[in-house]
Every structure is written in C-alpha cells, then in structure tokens.
Image (cartoon, rainbow, N blue to C red; front, side, top):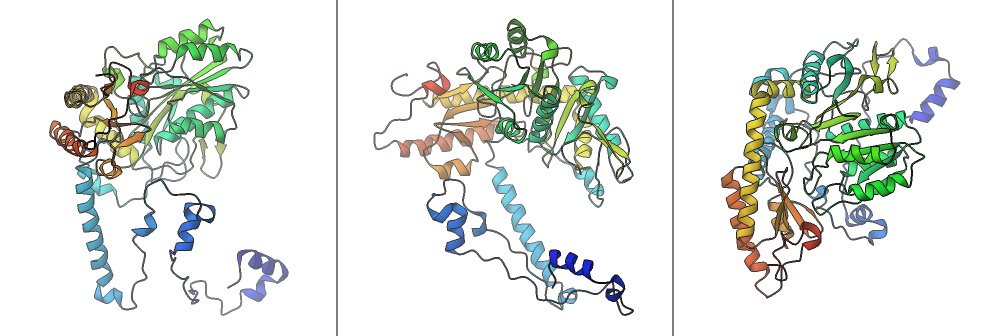
Length: 481
C-alpha cells in the first residue's frame, strides 16, 4: 500500500487519467492483511510507566491489563449472530459492574439520581451543535432551541438579560474554565492570571496553554482564597491588568471564595473595573450557592466576566457537559464567521454534543428552581450528618459552612479508597454529598471505615495530625483531641 506522503508524490508525478482507468472501481475494498493486534509485553509496560522502566507507577492500574479487545467478526458471523450474542453478554456484565460500583460512589461530585428514559427515542440521531448556539448553521440535525432555552435559564439564575449575555453548552467543566480564562486573556493580552492554590487543575492548564503569567495565591485553612496574600501579589503587579479565577467551591475542600471580598480587594489595590476580569468556576457549587442564603451571591450585577458550571455534577447528566456564560460585549474578541458552517463561532471545541442540551433541558423542566432548592437543603443536611458521624467515631473531619464536601483523614488502605472511589490529596480524603447519596449509604461507609480503621491502627500507630489541613478545632489526632 502506498503511504500518504508517497501517494501524494505519486499523484504529482503521474497523469490522473492514467490512474482512473475504465476499470476503476470506487467501491473496491482493499484486500491487504489487517494490522496485527496490539500486544502488551513487559517491555512496553516499562516504557509506559517511565523511561527505561525507572519510574514506578503510583497511579491506578494500567487499563491494558483489563481492556476489552475489538475482534474481527467471523466470515459467516452475519448468519450465526455469534458476535451479537457475545457483545450483548459483555454489555450485560458491564451493566452489572456499573450497578455495583454505583453503590460505592462517594468521592466525586456526580449526581447519579436520574432517569432519562423519555430521551431514549432521540439516541438514534447524530445531534451536533456546531458553532454559535444563537445562529443556525447549515447542519440541520441540532438541538439549538433546547440549548438556548437552557442558557436563558442560567442567565436568569445569574441575573443577566438575554440580550446582554453569550454562552454555550460545553463538553465539560474544564472547557468552561478554558473559555472563561481565554476571554479574559483576549481582553487583557498582558494581564496576569491569579488563582488560589486550591483552584481546579484546569485553571493552571489554561495558563500553560495560553502562555499566561500566573500567580498562585495562598489559601486559608478552609480552602478559600487568602485575600491578604492576593492583595500583596496585586500590589506587586499594579502595572498589569488582573485576570482572576474565583472558586465557587474548590475541588478538594469545597470552599467558596468570597466574591465580594475579592472585588473589594481589587478595588482597594487600585484596579478599576476596566482593568480586571473575573471568571467564576462554579463547576459544582455554582448551581447550589444561589439557594443558600448566607452564600456570596454570584451575579452579573457585580463586575464579573463569566461563570461556568458542570452539567454532569449537581444537575445529574449521564455524560460530561457544562454551561458557560459571559457578557456579549466580551465575546467579540473571540468571535469569527465560519463560511463552512454558515454560522459564527467563539467556542473552544468545534463539534459539540447536541444530546447534552436535551438532558439539561429535561432536568431543568422537571425540577425547576424549587426542586434544586430542596436538593441543596438535602445535601447540606446529609453532609452535616456525615461530619458528625465521623467525629463521633474519633475521626478528624471538616465541613465548610457553605459546602457539602466532607474532608477527613485519608484511609491507610488504597484498596479501601478505590472501593469507595474516594478523592485524596496528601493526608486528606473527601466525600461529596450529592442528591443521590442517601443516609443509608453514608451509614454503610462510616461503619466500613471504622471497621477497617480498627485494623489499620491496631499495632499502636496513630492517625495523622491534620491541623495544617483542617485546623485545630477539626483535628482529632491524639495531640489535639
């Protein structure tokens, strides 16, 4: 078979008519041998784990050890149906695995309480929302009316008029952060990105991707941004505009940055509203905080530039997605016309999942603001219940006032961590209490943790001191009981 480069070279040296002869068959199938299956041997594993095999793998196990191979059907498989039966059995076993693993899902902020059976009738269509949500493209199989309806709902939530905002449904929360920070960078090409050390890793990924100067700001014990340190860093860079990521719920501790205090700090340091851009990362709590009275209000009535939220977290979509909203006046710096689409585009991705807006629209219609308010109250109540149960068992635990993320000492056994799918960092782990997390599941978790913990420390060793992570009042190590 002629390689791609060789083929181009060949066409350039030969008359096309010599190739497209009378017996040319455009439907002919190449009969060359299929590529050999990918094999995994010890040498390849070493290369995967590190150069020369020197670096020890400390992450999860290599999926090549459990991967499901794609096999070629037998010649007569169309008649026997053996392949269909095999695939059906694999999927049935996979479903059982999902059911089992869902029982022990606690560490990651996904709401698994949903039923989208009514949308099954739409899974037979390739729905793609290419380009700008507000301008129809030549591609007709889209869900823009649903997408814009969802965007309008969030625009009302964050208090911005329909004609004053622009947004789209992203493929994930990270894309929302990438877009929000990109808008800020385009508005202030020489600006400095400020983000607390406990910001999501996608914020620092954006800084690398966009080659932005980035200042990491210290945090308080709670995980909130330390505005004293923020002030010092701002004053040291007064000659450059500020692009700031504000966390509406940090990844590990679920801390909510005080938006009002952040804005006040910027103003006190001499930054007028035309010299800073604020992106609010509300991946999880961006949809919860509007229903908590004591929470700093996220609203476009304040000098913020954009807000993003995940759709697969508190909302409960079965696929990763998110919502990104910014001011219409800002999007002009990114927008460009695309003749290929007969539309405009200012998004990060090209093709966008057209099914995600359908799931979001369906859930928002079913629950509404009042439904989400009830679920927020349930999550906060159950989070306090878990924190109290852990502390009663003598386990260090912390819960921020505006959060449903319960932080506690990291279990010693990594198998226990994987069983309950806990998210860990250093000496701490956390459980994110979502609408799908019941009191029964929390009781089972605490019972299992206490049981294993009695074995981990039966040799007289002591649990770690977590003062630096959760503060003196929340640490129950022997020195701070």
